[in-house]
Amino acid sequence: MSRVTDPHTYKRRRVLAAGLALSAVGGFTALRYGERLTAGAGQVQGYTSEAPRLSGNDKDAAASAGKSHRLTTKHAATHYNNAYEFGWDKTDPFRRSADFTLSPWSVTFDGLCHRPGTFDIDELMGMPFSHLEERVYDFRCVEAWSMVIPYNGRPLRDIIKVVEPMGAARYVAFTSVYRPDELPGQASAFSTLEWPYVEALTLEEAVHPLTFATFGVYGDRHLPQNGLPFRITVPWKYGFKSPKFIVRITFTKDRPNATWHRENPSEYGWYSNVYPSISHPRWSQATERRIWGDGDIERIPSRPFNGYAEQVAHLYPGSKQQYR
Image (cartoon, rainbow, N blue to C red; front, side, top):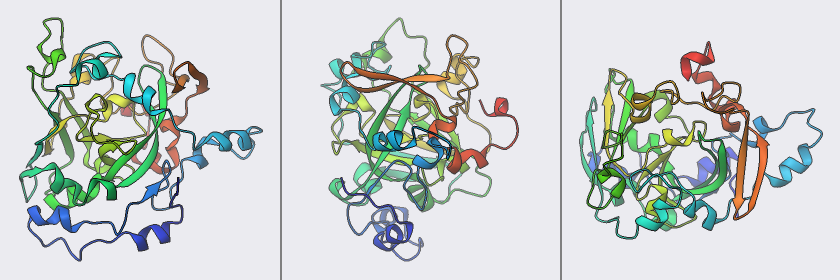
């Protein structure tokens, strides 16, 4: 797998249309890359995730670095998922998603932005799927299991620039699709969640270089069990903070309600950054089960911000408790 590690090379190879003084419809296709890129976990504009996961005194640094680019198998990552729209069991998303309609798919941008509108997913990609950037990110679930997954997409901030958030916008809410006829979890009489699912970030988090508008995984865009055809990937937070099946993006002044935080705020913080020293009320977050494949699981230490502290810790000054 080829990788772009030099930030200057990365910037040279990335081609942006001059200016954003285009209509929003044309703006997404104007934000093109010159070719398909591949970047490692955090290898974006000079960032590397390997640096924060290892210390200079780590006696096992060489061995850890040797594992740093290993991927979870596609089978494991597409057959063991949380997507409660399909059901509560880890196998439900794979078993129950065969009839989920992936196309056509459109996303509405509204709220405090200068260029609201509804756009087809191909407009958001701005290029053929095969030309999208690939990033390898560590994924950490709040349930203390993790994977290493290659995501296909583009920085979310490129899309946000086109719709031009207003100066008063401080937060971004992401609303997932509501189709109880196709999503049995939404139709279940046993579900206590309020549908459709809503997740939210601060605008500063949403435009961070690591926040990724995701249209595929493992080079495959036809995997609804993984939240496709359009999701957001925020690698330094617990996985439920990376919203799936997005159909609406809303810019707000006040902090939006988020589904899991509203459901149980003591267990699911609004920020939900990965803090190994702050336990979930029902289990420790100090370690995680790293899933590499069927039967190939190891117990490893969890890292602050899931290993991306060097890149994102500055977003959260002060006590960790206020950013739970």
